[in-house]
Image (cartoon, rainbow, N blue to C red; front, side, top):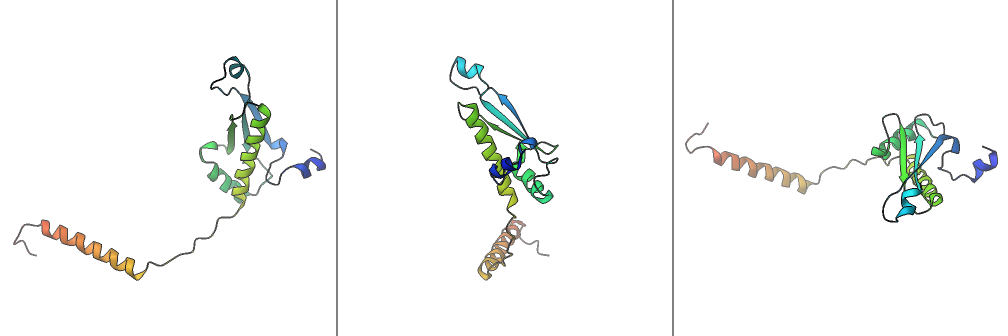
Length: 144
């Protein structure tokens, strides 16, 4: 890949050498054309072997990918929404870039909050009511 190609690539798009594509049948209505053309795209990106992103971004990316990632750290994205193979390729790459962009943003730190006085009192009164209900279940005269 030449340096000019590197500059043309969007910021969160991995290099071509780290992506593999497989073209698949898309199915659905359309008759002979849809049954004969492989316009769907299955884009695979090996996150574990990638040198494009840092280790912490890799971990967040695999977590975000969910079921699209296998146990070997390979993310598979399928695009079959368009009639054209070219548009499906662009769609799959854009979805992968969006996923990487989302993973590259560090998560916001949680700001711990304290329960309000009203919520504490409400919780305690609910516990008291529940205790009273259980107390009333015992037979009369069986005081401890």
